Length: 473
Image (cartoon, rainbow, N blue to C red):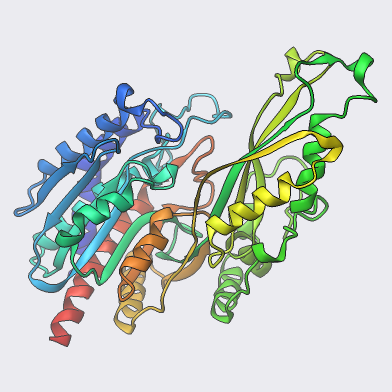
């Protein structure tokens, strides 16, 4: 392919076709089913699918077949397919469901308010990862425009990824005869360490989650009356969490929740640490004099990609500070999110949490751990030589520097599933969530220049995959 002509074509399509649709998409409050159990009645997920479907159908791409699948009781799945002129099957993945609003958006911004500013599109979901379906189809259109061969390409765009992808296995079962043997998976739902290279995700952490419920009273009592006699539900919750996490260091204590880090991942972490330096931790908006838990770049990379970490992501039973009276509260409920090393399976880790937190409750309090959907981690298979060469060539041509390789600290639930279903496939997992993009949080943005360059890189990888198949044949 002609790299410069490809860049011009992709940039024009982004400006005229993709960006206007993403602005519309940001306005749709397409919360994932976990955060909107009445999603079907509210219709936002269906609105997001209709927008993407209509855009895909309007593209001047001969032979592009589209279908919206709706299995009973499940979120819709948009699938597209284009026959290839080279052997093999490529699976391209994205999702349209979003995280909830979150507080803390700066003035003028909001989750459903699209704002274009300094080459960024602010708002929920465009980068995580509503852009994916538009970028994937545009990459196919770019191949068609340059008469470049590609293998058969099948796109899956789901609507429950942010809930742990519970509907995807059923759709994969239904589509199994159509999919056949997949030899390349392209997932556009990941992150990047900077905005000046093609970043390839080499591993993903899993997640174990649930709600810790501590109950000590049937109703609240005056703290001056009961304080010193009635144990604090919050204090008991703190003691229970100390079984799991050392509060001084943040280290997760049970050894079975850790995993040995492979030497090649340690080597990659050293390379990334040398490349990014303090940016590894300076990318986060630390308040005031807050210091990071890790300042060594290599250790910081490993801490966010291969070591377990706990966060209390929500709480019930705590009134807002301005409304709080001097009352011993009856209960404290904490929503826990434990990031797991890639090899640690979510189901036994969740069961370990339940056993650890419910055993022998302090003061005999009513303690219950209610598991939430988790996700297994994933570690990529070794890159085939053709793929490594194609990644470097695409990154050099469209970003001006070699491709970079790094694990990510988040979870993409479908990755472990696809890795198990297609054990012989190669994987390109990448994305646009770089420094400051703040997926799931306030002020989330899509870095538009990176998204354009990444679209061109996807086209190049599809072309390289076809060329490799032709050489082999």
